[in-house]
Length: 256
Image (cartoon, rainbow, N blue to C red; front, side, top):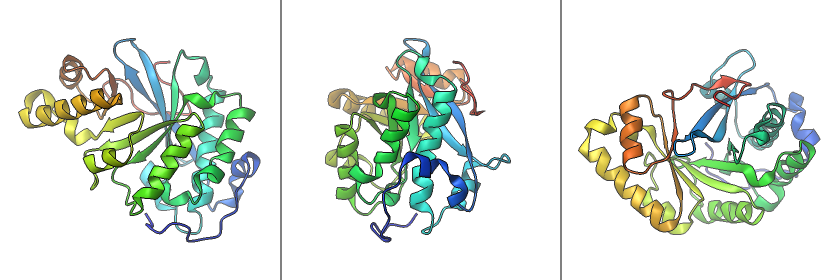
């Protein structure tokens, strides 16, 4: 990702403009994967994962994003996720959230760039306070103050904030010193075979303690076996995501 903010004089766009993906050199759609609440035994959230319309992977689609279209893609991605979630009646699921990944390097002013998101939530009758924005901890964001400003504005607007892939990036716990999101998602490498690995167990339990003290919800992602899930549940990680529960489903809500 480009690490320079404000590289282009972007103008704010509205929901209808963002829905017009002809302004992008490619089209895309979404697959949805549940984040399960194992205490309530229901989806805590669904993550919207970008896919190509011909079955291309997320990595392929994101490879089409560059400096010339990053802002437009980020805006269109948000609107598309809300539109599809509304069509699939996600808001009818009790307390269930819609999780959207965002590109912080595409946000030049948080209060302006969020307009199309809020407009889409209104137009599609989707409650904005159930929209969760994830940023990966591995994202090469050199301007920490800018990311903090984004999160603060999203909080002010009543949106949910999350750090994805926590434990995989360069920032680690230093990011939590600067700002505290509502949700932290543990990187899948910390989860792999955790039931057999005392080092991973110690790290995850330490992060869980920090999250408990800071009143941050903790999600384990990449859970692939019953043994991993059972161990995580035993140490109080109630929110889990991964192939053990469901694979991403093309324009559908598995386990809903």
